[in-house]
Amino acid sequence: MKGFDPQYKDLPDYILKCTKMIWEGRDISALDWHYADDLLVRTPAGISRGNTAGKANTMATLAEFPDRQLFGEDVIWSGNEDAGFLSSHRIISTATHQGGVFGPATGCRCTFRTIADTFCRQNRVWDEWLIRDNAAIAVQLGQTPQDAARSLLLAGDTAMPLTPKTDIEGPYTGRGNTIECCEQHAEILLRIMAADFRVITEHYDRACQLSLPCGQEVHSHDAATEFWLGLRSAFPSADFKINHQIGRVDPHLSPRSAIRWSLTGKHDGWGRFGAPTGAQVHVMGVSHVEFGPWGLRREFTLFDEIAIWKQIFLQTEGTQATPSKIK
Image (cartoon, rainbow, N blue to C red; front, top):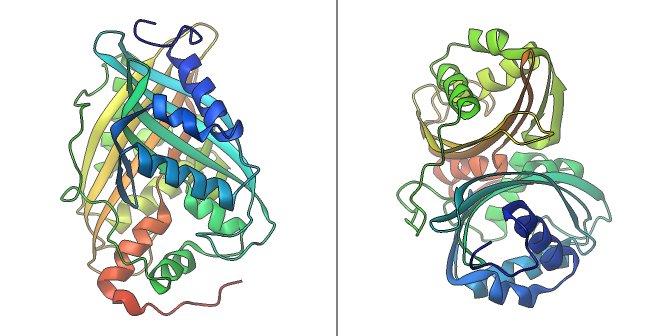
């Protein structure tokens, strides 16, 4: 690839090899020639800027989960060598908790997913959107997402998670592509967010498999409807946006789509997040799907449930949030 190190044969090869080198190879210094000096990384918790911050965050995560392994499930990508590439990299990780952000060491073995959208050009990452299923980690450590959010506040982390007002525009301003499978995926999401849940029975495979926040693994139309209805009903008046979409049709693989999306507005309904509080909430979400002969057959949707609860608690309980019983 033009401008990239010769060891990388294509974009997925670059993404997979870099990830393994940095995280499992513990070559943190490799970030100096893989991350731009002014790299922007957006997570639901907020924004970090610069390669120095990237190295610090990587080391902190490895200190808490020193044996973490990152298995690349898929890289769904768009772009070209001249304009640059946008990759949506889905990872499933295994790791042992040795103490840190999630509390004192438990020795618990955890499995959790991450999806990272990265803008890559000239052998470097310049812009990134990163969502990790932190609630899945909390649940496996014996906490609820609410407990984990309150623990952050009690530890002094009172920074408001990412919102459109605090977001920063970076060098990547593309919107992806319009391949048929991602247009179909976008239409499904738009109908769901318009409360037309019939679209699930019409376009999902009856035996669909769903991997959802909190590490939930479920199947069927009913499970898909329960999840999406629970999310939308919690924020019934929130503004839904598709921020980026990519479709891919590659040899030996099902047609796939990666859509990064957001919900922004009031927590003004009963649903996944309990009694309505009126808090202003921003949900940064991402969904990967695969299509088969009977419709949407696999879906991987992530958002950071802890960051959502933190937004609610900051506006309803302030910094004096009282923890419930934490196991």
